[in-house]
Image (cartoon, rainbow, N blue to C red; front, side, top):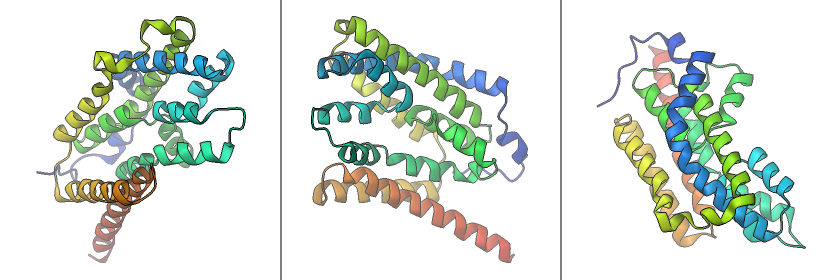
Length: 247
C-alpha cells in the first residue's frame, strides 16, 4: 500500500515555521529522555579517557553523534591520528547518505540554506519520524528540525551530567537502554510508507551492508549499505521523474 500524494498541496508539506518546530520539539521530548542516559555514559567515558570538560562538551555540541563520539574515545591517545578519527566518524555516520536520499523528494523544494540547516540536526529518531510524516501527507520538517533540537539539547545535558555525576548510569546496557533506539526505529519502519520502492531500497541497503560486514574492513558496511540504498532510491526517483517529463 502506498500513499497517493497527488491531491496534497506541496506547499503544506514543505512548511517550516515556529509552530511546527515547537510541535516537533515536544514530540521528541519523551524519546530524548533516553538520550540523556547515553550522554551520561559518554561524559563519564570522556572523563576517564582524559578529555577535559570543555573538550567533552564541545564534542557533544559540535559532533552530536553518539556512536561516532564513543568510537573517537577508543582511538584517543597521545599520538591520536586526526585522519583516522575523521575516517571512523565518516564511516559510522555514512547512514546519513541514506537519510538524505529518502528525504530528497521533499528537501529539493527548499532553498540550500534551509535544506542543509534542517539536515544539520538529523539523527535516527527525528529522521524516521519526519519520513513517516511525509509519507502520510503531513509536513515533516518541523519534526526533523524541532525534534533534532530536542535530541541535541538533551544529549548535551546528558554529557554534562556524565562529567560531574557519571556514576549514576555508567552502563546504559544494564538497563536495556541500548535497545530503545532499535525498537523505536523498527516501529517507524513498520508504520511507515509501504510500497515496492521502499521495500527494494531497504533490501538492497541491508544486503549490501551484510556483504560488506562479512567481506570488507570493519565499519565499511555502514558506508556500503548507505550508498547502495541511497543510489537505488535516487535512481528510482529520477527514473520516475524522467517518465513524467516524457508524458
